[in-house]
Image 1: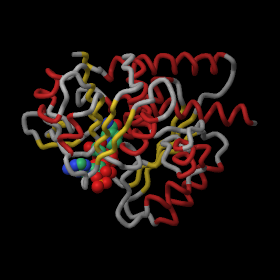
Image 2 (image 1 turned 60 degrees about the horizontal axis):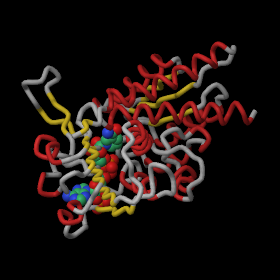
Image 3 (image 1 turned 90 degrees about the vertical axis):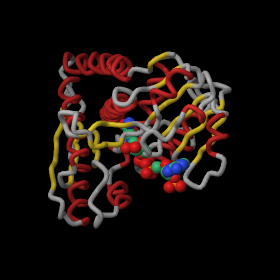
Length: 294
Ligand code: NAP
């Protein structure tokens, strides 16, 4: 069984990004610049944004963190995004989700200039991905693809089952796996909460991607022996034994499933680290697109 270690794979991606940024700086150019917008003070969002900003610093990217109050109106948030769109110094914009209930997330995502949409959630990015055109791939599926590449896990001709059809994980993951490229060419089944016989379908998967947000959902009897198992789930569960008072749990029962799988991602330490690597690659791409276009 191969442990698909996100630390190892993400370090490799980040090292090559750092070399590219060092070369830009050595040539007297400015670094790629990511703007992260954080609305309110959701604990998990704070943690995600902090690690994105920290990664920018470590790789030599510029970053700007914009903190906005929980009670900001939708119009005010759109204006803020438009201001960032106009800022020539900023290459990538991400608005950390989820947003407060009174704000329509789609309206905010659509307000982002598609050329700066490093999260890959804008309809233009999603449409281009569906058509197989160059675009920003949502960071989590992109990170999973980078992980498959790093560990040279072949997907061609395999049956891939993706549990979850969200716009940020399941749906784009299923598109990537089905595309005609080196780490695609799988035959893909997408499952969701209305899928009957889920267990049977999962059991037929050579590659099983669990992205449903239900801790420990995937058990041994849902997995074909020798399958590759990718656990996207991240759920915070109270744990008084942990210094932070909570632990992070994935969608796969790792202890049961790992012994029968051929490769599996741990949680934490798996897909989450790759997501940041995917975001950084998108930010460099946005920079390259903008600087070569001007
Ligand atoms: P989401 O928007 O809530 O989507 C969950 C999907 O799972 C939906 O399509 C839902 O089906 C499906 N689902 C729910 N219960 C199911 C069940 N019992 N059987 C089959 N399908 C079921 O969640 P998300 O944003 O995609 O995130 C999924 C998980 O990944 C969460 O734990 C999240 O925290 C994590 N995540 C991790 C990363 C990372 O970097 N590792 C990044 C993003 C998200 P319906 O469509 O029918 O409702």
